Amino acid sequence: MNKGYAEHVERELRRIFAGKKIIVVGGPVAGLTALARQLRSLGAARPFVIGSSMGLGTPPTKEEAEWCSLELSAKSVNDSLRGYERRLLHPPDEVRARVDAWDPERQAIALGAIILGEVATVCGRPRFGARPRDWIALEDKTRIDEVWDALGVARAPSEIVRLDKAALLAAARRLDSGAGTVWAADARDGVHGGAEKLYHVRSEAEADDALALLSGEVDRVRVMPFLKGVPCSIHGIVTPEGVAVFRPVELVTLRRPDSGRFVYAGVATFWDPEPRDREAMREVGRVVGAGIAERIGFRGAFTVDGVMTRDGFMPTELNPRIGAGIGVLGQSIEAVPLTLLAIAAQAGQALDFRTALLEAEVVAAADASRRGGAWCVVPTPLEARPELLLAAEGDGYRVAGPDDEVVGRISVGPSDVGGFVRFTPSPAHTPVGKPIAPRAVSAFGLADRELGTGLGELLVAVGAGPRQAP
Image (tube, rainbow, N blue to C red; front, top):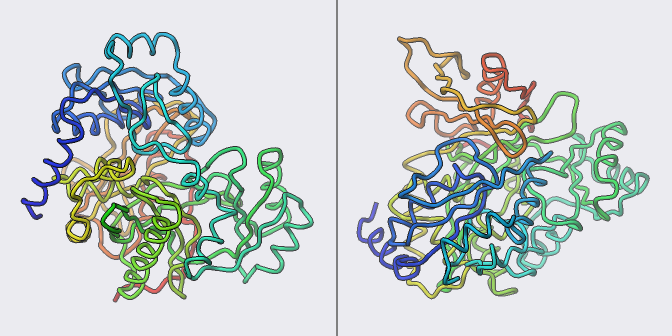
């Protein structure tokens, strides 16, 4: 790690945040603790954290931050995010009163990492880095293929079809290359992520299941072939100086038996594509970052998600915002607050980012220090309990005994949806090069058997397909 660059970034961020009152938002209270601590380390006044719920982990101490939980309860992650963002715009009277008492001069700003919708203010305070509508619109999966084509990015064939069974099945027959098709909903009622409103359709029964879930919620659906390979993403940050593009990130994607529904389950950097595919992914990130900067003045972090197939990387969606992979990449380079740098870029701050050096430092650190894991929400409420320690058993896990080497951990606790299960493999004991999705399946099965988490049977979603690094 270039110590001089880390010190430079700290000086630049202090110019923005030192002495500021900041409302921290973007998820459960426990998940926002680290961001609150980073802001304090940069000289910010004691922040005020507003979480959707308590979540799994430790809340800030009184010295670190004021905080409150909105105690939201939802049926899905996307419903939780939308409900949370509505409450941030129109908070309960008691929350507004606490914020007003903490900031009587009304000089605070609000910031958060993963915010999907138009949240321009929080408790009447302006959001630092609020996204314009034309940025948010790029997340609509029925519109993004136009962007790939305009920028010359190779993609799989697709059709945009109205929500009509006969029309959708006809498109599926035209596009199916032997493994079914994937149906992705539009963003008529708001942005959605985490593989919600995304369905693998291989039969008329699965088509009926998708239609039942989408009815009344969408107007149009993108139909494309199911792509065999490793779900993955390339992340970058657009600054006024250019585009920093990082290394590939695995999107841990699972499914349930006899179901077309995907289960998005986290991100990790242990997997390596074949070198030429890695560089092709990074070039896609560079082209897309530069393209959206030129077309709509985009600034900040973005992710190009897709699948690494035998024919190379095929993009499927664009998230013009901070994605979960930014947090995982940032764990490899803790001396540089990557999330806050991305937020500053999104807010249009004229910092000396030294973008080329930022890219080089993050890529080198993330290659040298692999991070990440997997997580799932369940509708069953779960209380926090001691971690379940894991020992190796073949390519999977068993419960560690007193004399075993610990190679991973499972944590459980509450979430906005009910319960939350997190699998964290030990970086020192996790093979580099292979996807961790199969290991996540083993760990989640153990969590179900030992802790009664209610996850149910999970399988790797994609099967064979990608070229592997030698």
